[in-house]
Image (tube, rainbow, N blue to C red):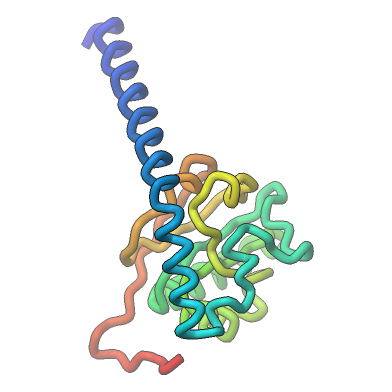
Length: 178
């Protein structure tokens, strides 16, 4: 391919990507009231959903310092991804004992399991922030996101290095009752 043709393809790709991101933000803004109602609904059905809700808005304890240089943020959506992250964290902790490592989860069960299984491996466990630009503005140096299911965070993913892992709990394996 000639250089002008390559440049034209690259230009169209960048333009399309910017347009898709713009549409994502417009849709996100339009759906904000629905998200607020959903959060309220979940919180009224289970009060534990509101515990540490500030973490979902991006307010983490000051001791976490996840935005420091070299920090790694593992995002484990499901219980299977938490279990998968434990193995990876143990290896990384052995190889890089000074690197700050954090784990975020989205569910109450995932959070409880992460706090139990990752004690001593992760420097902190917290709920993943909502995917709004104002909430995830302070990103980590790298994020290792499990891809066992669920949507990926667009605002977060645009600003960090990303490593994907896969982790699912096999159907025949007994799942913890959390």
